Image (cartoon, rainbow, N blue to C red):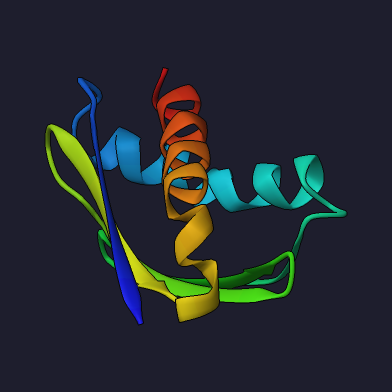
Amino acid sequence: MAGFNIDVPHQLGQEEATNRLKGFFGKVREKYQGQVTDLEEAWDDNMLTFSFKTYGFAIKGKGTVLAESIKFEGDLPFAAIAFKGKIEQSIHDELVKAMS
């Protein structure tokens, strides 16, 4: 499995960033109905574990909300390596919007 790492800085503080991120997956579910399925999230304080499928690829990972940034890391199936940059960029862009 290939990995991905995404780091998004913010100036919201840990609590507000966590609250925004908790609403993030609902928005992703609505916006990308035809592209993202089986979206699951579980929270433990400021730590998130998530999984979803996109274009037949299963993606899973974890996110950590810190006082000044959000860090996402996870696994991509080998077959999705060609799309790694696009997947990372899409997640990054959506996180930036959520933190704005």
